[in-house]
Amino acid sequence: VAKTPDNTFTPLSDNMYVMNERQRDRIIQIAHLLPLMSGEVVLPKLEEKGRKWLEQIRLETMKNDDKVKARQRFRICPTTMRMMTCIMLCKVLETLIQKHGFQGAETQLKQNPQLWKELIVKMQTPTMLAVFDTLADYQLENALYFFRSRIEDAFSSKNYSGQSPYDRSRRGRNDSIFECLDVTFTFEQAQQQSVAIKGANVTHEAVRQMLKNWKRQGLINILPNSRYQKVASTV
Image (cartoon, rainbow, N blue to C red; front, side, top):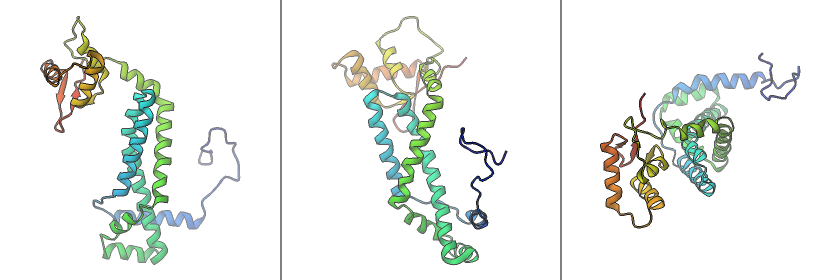
């Protein structure tokens, strides 16, 4: 089983790639040193890279109204940022080991617990950050390939749309506005949907009253960051 290739159509072979002793030792060394790095660190260039990727996908999905892809980007981005942080932490350790040796790297980290924070910030090079796009695009592509239909079904379900237990027999334009909004949304997004469905004469006060009605009916909750969230119905 251990020799089974990762690629679906790759034939079994007795000459598969195998790590050499040096590579194995380096992995063991890095795994030993990783627990010595703990705490919080700010990586502004990595965050900027993530924001640019999010905006790029947002603009792409606006062209064809791909709501599934637009929503998935919010899941993929933080996952990729965690992966990039792990990669850079390993790169920090590899650099220390190459410069000081395994024992020397361990000594450096113990004597200066903040050293890794200084080094990981320097790891935010253009070459390293380019890996972000590769990882993020790959994960997004796979998520859509395997789960798009299931996600679309979830979007169209009454439970996902936040239908209240108090389902109404009469449906109006406010119901259509409600269904068009994401699970979490802002006042501005609610106003945009109102204008799209009711016309340009919709006032701020009318939108506020609509949101108040939804809150009173148990359709939405108000989040601390001035956003609104649909309340999932219960069975």
